[in-house]
Length: 261
Length: 375
Ligand code: SF4
Ligand code: SF4
Ligand code: SF4
Ligand code: SF4
Image (cartoon, rainbow over all chains, first blue to last red; front, side, top):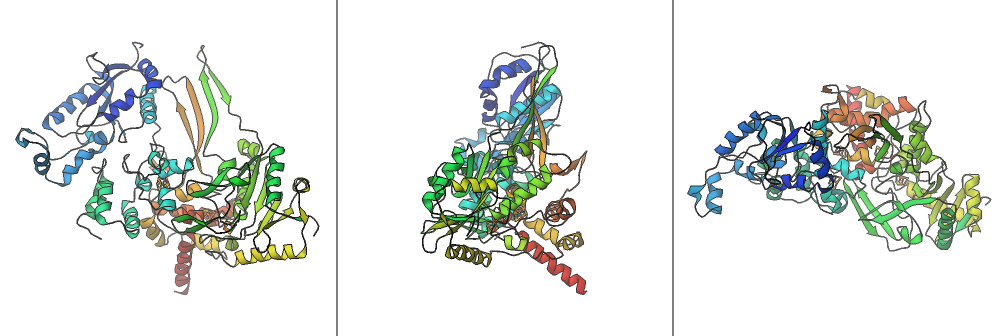
């Protein structure tokens, strides 16, 4: 670890830790990461703690409590650059399902003593609270993309993270389109690339875990799924996962509400 | 018939052997993961025997034909595009040297010569388009050229056009008329056999090594009948008279907006199109910055970033992007390269997850244009 290397901190909010683990999973590259940046704060990986300020902060998780909302301001204050990692931090995560419901219904269904639960009405992305320098998508994020973003920030260049659809990667790999050749529901056409078309490569439709691509036409895809026999309820479910908090997916889930078709 | 011979199945296998013994990597149709696509063909067994396809807008399925046909299907999922024009091409790799300089090595493309086997007439026409665009202009794509040089082509006539085929409209099929070393037409009527025509001296030489009978009048008539049948069973048509002017006159048509309501801007149509050649150049570096690579990757006019100029998008809407694509394929390609950018293979129709059909959209434009002309 060279002393001139930029310092890196990793912060966790409401999330499952999967994205932080992606960083730890970079086994092959971890030494290079440790060389390129000084890992100053990363409770998941080390007990060492270096006081801020930090050059780069990676933020995982969404804001779901008043305490979170206060803490994220502190993170911003001690960070030169803030990069959100994952669907929770970038669009609110699966926990944003509460946004179109009454959160008390959930707490009462899940917890024995809901009165001890102090939580906000909505799960919101980090960017709803502070200025964010880059948002990395995925549930979880893709290792190679994470390394690319860290490299870009260390080297002071633009990260090369495409915003086009998963279909681009799917076709570049020469995979069979599961939508066209197998009649499966695939969110690839409306979802941002980054995973390398992982699900279609395993004979599954894309679940949309990277959130909407830059020109997502969710209503057309929903029309196609409906005319192939999918019910409004199922289409709503399809759009109501990790990125239901994104504008494009959330709005489509709303449109399907109540069996609009 | 001089120069025309007839092979049986064993003869077809011997043709494969002859190509292999000449050192070619033989690439042809194979069944993989629910589709017919391009893969390495070692023996007859690798070819899709008795397999047909069913193609329509946004729809592709394999089907059992109930016979022994080897070429009883239409355009495979992939054309020959990626054989010569790969989806991801390493252009150079640089390494930082201890003295701080950069050592740049240019990637060499694989020189192993390729034999295309059973390539369809529309796809062969598309290879011709890429030759003109990439290999015969002032600046040549040297990697394309290196792969393309010394290619051997065994073309196959189509007997079973798919619901998405319209090569007859585009004058590219169903029987190949050039660009091949050997052209095969499969005859299922009577004895299962293949009419083989040499198109080049190299083709003649290879055919001479393969056990075959000289073709008689009946063989040629039977092959002609196969082609005539195919010609009359095109799944789709596109009127091409005045097509270029139609597209230019339709620049402000409200119909682009209508297509955009359906279009997913997913890029599938351009990725599967055998003539689409849009790429982006991407530079990647590792964390240390010591190793850098430049890649050329397939991109698409349907991607928003592809139209970014400085801070703005030249084509910010999907309507503008679909218009760009259709107008380039069918109109400005003619001005640019003196030929159509569409060969009528129908892939953009079959592999569009929204089932958008270029022949139908053009027919609408024609209808609209007609109504406007009539006032
Ligand atoms: S399988 Fe899904 S991601 Fe792949 S091309 Fe088809 S629709 Fe797109
Ligand atoms: S478009 Fe013509 S040449 Fe191409 S696959 Fe269809 S029938 Fe064959
Ligand atoms: S535009 Fe469509 S039909 Fe024409 S060559 Fe391309 S993929 Fe084939
Ligand atoms: S026309 Fe079809 S394949 Fe092409 S971008 Fe639009 S939806 Fe995708």
